[in-house]
Each structure stands twice: as structure tokens, then as C-alpha cells.
Amino acid sequence: MNGITSFLHNTNINSVVTLFFVPLIAIIAMKSIVYDGWRHVYSINPMFILIATLGLQTVWIWSKKYKWRTRIISSLVAINLLCVSFWMIKNHPFQNTFFNELTLLTTNDMPHRFELDYWGLTYKQAEEYLLQTVPKDAKIKIAVANFPGELNFIVHTKEDRERFVLYPRDIVGYDYFISNFRFEEPPSDLQVVKLFMVDNFPIIGIYKPKRN
Image (cartoon, rainbow, N blue to C red; front, side):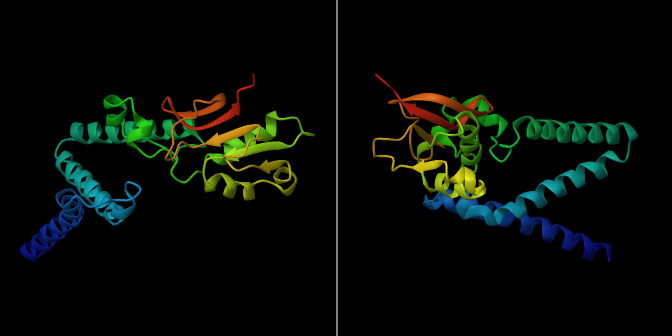
């Protein structure tokens, strides 16, 4: 029975590893087009979690032979969880926009190499900032860089929604422009009003036309 159990265990591990690496190798080898970064390989996420879990389980079993090993492993896991929790609290409500620590050490060109706020969730905070800073009796004339900026209107109250006047990006007349920098550079022809940052990188910005 032990032999069968061991065989099944090893087979499961090999299957998980295969299901994780084969799609990645195929994409690289065939130079496949992968739209929007990770979208077409979401299916390997469960395999990634299983590999990490199996790795942790293996290390834990190895550590149980000596108490000092168990204490070290437990301490490292606890420290990691505390660091992640602290980071999430620090960057709330933008904790969904995070970067691998290694990428932060190797590039200063984050906006060009990685997705920032892909879903445009940060438009909500940018619009709330304008609602709080623009006088209550004034209309907020804005243009947005893409469709999520318009979708975020629905999360505001009816009274707040009525304060916004939405302009097309290419029509003169708006007082503020909001961009999450998707498919475009930060606008150099506009003046910065407010930047929302994660790990020292702007993930959304509010701008206004430069006045002569």
C-alpha cells in the first residue's frame, strides 16, 4: 500500500508540475501572442498554489525531525505573512496593485513593462478626491483615459454623479483629466493635480490643463 500511495503521490506532483510548466514553455517556444499579460495563462494559477503548498509541506515534514528547524520555518512563515499584511494595510485601498520585489530591484521602467491598475479600480478614489476637493456648488468637468473611468461613476451616490460632466478626451472644455496610464504615457501637456502611488510608482493620476 505504501508503494501505491507513494506512486500516486509522485504522479500527482509530476502532473501538477507538468500542467504548470508546459503552457509557459509552449508560449515561449511558439512565441504566442498573450493579450494583457497574464490573462491567457490564469489556468496555471491553481498549479502554482499547489506547488507552493507541496513545497511548504515538504519543508515542514523535513523540519519536524528537530524542533529548532520547526521554529525557524514557523518564524519565517509568520514574518512573511506579517510583511504581506503590513504592505496591504499600508497601500489600502490599492492592495490589488502589487509588484514582485525582484522587479522593483531590476527596473525603473515599471509602467512600460508591467500592468498597473489593469481593471481601472483606482478611478473610484481619484473621482472621490475631486468630489472632496472641488467646491460643492461647482460642476466637475472631467475626461478619462478609458472606459473604467466612466464605469466607476456608478459607485457614487446619485447626488455625486450629477456633479460630474464627462467630456471626450479630445474635446476642449474639461477641467480635469484622469488616467490610469493604460496604453498611454502620463500627459506631458497637462499639469499634475494628484498622483496615487504604490511602491513609489504612480498607478493613477489627476491632471488639469495648463493655464496661460
